[in-house]
Amino acid sequence: MKPLAPGTVIFHRYRGYGVITAVNLMTGWISARFGSEGRTLDLNLSCDQVQHADGEPIHFRVAPPDRMPHGRLMAMMRSLHEAGYQRLYLYSWPKPSGLHWRWHLFTGKRHWYRRSWREGWYGSGAEYNLNPVLGWGDSPGDSVSELSSALARFDPQGLAQALGRDEDHARWFSEVCDALLPNYAYSLGLEGSDGAMPEALPVIPLRANVPVYSGPSLPWPPGWASLWSGSRRQGLRLIDPVRY
Image (tube, rainbow, N blue to C red):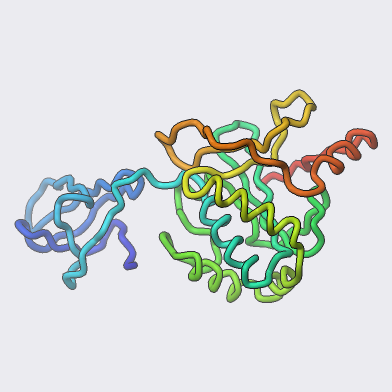
C-alpha cells in the first residue's frame, strides 16, 4: 500500500492530476488542489474515484476502523500459537481515562504480574488512532502473516522466547478468539471493580457502533483466579502501573 499524505500526487477521473493538501484516514475525506485552481476540493476516498498518479486505485474501507489493535494482535497470536509459539501472551487493560486500552505482549513464563518488558512490545489505542501501526516495520492493514513476519524481523530474539508449549493457555486463548473476533477483545484490568474479581472476563468493542457483547460468558485465563486471590492476601498490586 502506497502512502497517502499531504503532498501526494493523485489523479481524478474528471479533474485530472492534483495534489493532496489534507487527509483524514479515519473518515476517508481528503482535500486536494487541481491545476491552477485556487480553492481546494473535498473528496471522499470511498466513492470519488481517486487514484494514485500512476493509475493505482485508492481503496478505502467504508466500515469504521478499529480504535485499537487488540483484535489484530489476538489474530496474530492465535496464528503463532498454532505454529508452536505458545508462550506468547497478551495483557490488555484500560488507561486511567477509560478512553483507550493499553496492550502488552510478553513471552516466556506466564506470570501476569511480573511480566517481561521489551521495547516495542507494548502500546496504547491512543497512539494507534493517530498511526494504525504497531511499530515493528509493519503497515496499516497488514495481514496476520505479515504482522507475524514483521515481529520476527523486528525482534527475533524476543520471539524465540515464545517458542514452547503452554497448552492450557493456548486452548483458552483460541476459545476466546472464536467467541470475540472480529468485533471484540478482552480486558484483564480490574479498574472500577471495587477490588472484586468479576465472574466473567470483561469484553470491550473494537470499533464504534458495535452492539454490546451478548455472547457466552468467558472464563479468565488459566491460573488467574489463584493469582488474584494470592495477591490480595499478600497485599500486592495485581496491576502494576506503567506509563508511556
